[in-house]
Image (cartoon, rainbow, N blue to C red; front, side, top):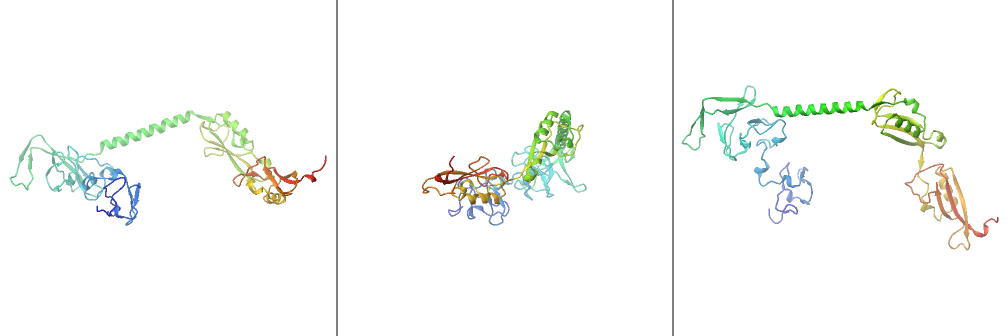
Length: 369
């Protein structure tokens, strides 16, 4: 690459090409190998940027891939580097019987040759053919008694005459089938074991859903735990108005897993998730934050809280003004909600929460005892 092309920070001297359109990513504006991926500006394909996709040559990159369609053979179900295989694209592939290298990718190889010497390990491989009738791949197995005839013409290949030539059909994937079968057996055994374990933990509820509904939620939780359930949770729903506060904290629904109807004799696993649903009075954010109330007129603060729906607003007078230079009469000193001196818009309170507004007044107006 010339000096004007980005040469890399983490991977100096590496040329990055788009896997989709082949564009040189190093030339694209903003490209850097510090990213984990890069979207090609030509075709918008996302390309990974890491050591796993760096190859010393095109040959290394395409190793183990079909020379016709470029698909990785390891990703094809049932394909293993032995004998003759057929790629998903229909290409017939041949592998070295010793080192299992793909012979199709070796220089000079062609499908019609009767034998081929592997350029990687030097093993002489007899090339398999394809049976046109059933479209299955065959491999030639050599017998021990073979006679070789070598042509003086270097452009021709050696031919073998064998006393016996055995044609073996493409081996079925027995190993893979056994692995799949073994995995299925393991899964079934695991499911059976888990099912038996869960069966041994089955216990009766002891109560029907009708008996538990209407009780205080703490009582219902205690009864369920006494029955033997170990995973009891509570779910609070704040939706009751002040006028319905007598219904507060009473159970409205019991969920055993996904079941909401059950009787006292029904059995469930003791570790089953049990949810006790109850309702409480709805809550609201305060009309003003504690900071906003400072230095406001107390009557304005009262109006703000009452307009927001708070029904328990009270006032307290602090007779502490002498000259009126520091504080004005009627100016709010502090506000508390349910005893909280600090509150903001993220806090929530019931509308019947006690709101006490303390404000300044002239000392001379303090009533005499």
